[in-house]
Image (cartoon, rainbow, N blue to C red; front, top):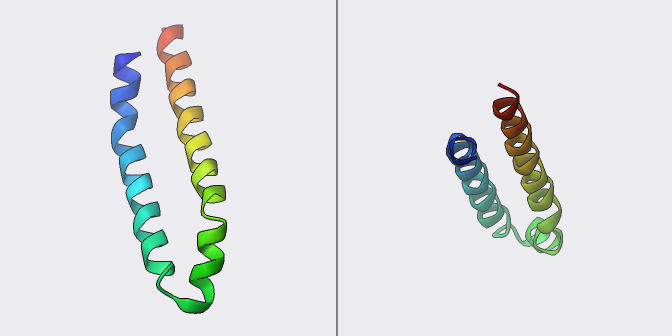
Length: 65
């Protein structure tokens, strides 16, 4: 399990960093920023589910070996 988590730390870190940068950038635009700040949790939760799915898939693959 430790190996699976370590393999997925970098992609998750990069994904969350890009998400945070885009959220900070778009929130400064007056017309669009307010709408994005109201629904920021939707893409965040989708990405989080994707990361958990990839970790689960890798864990099953390593466990099957």
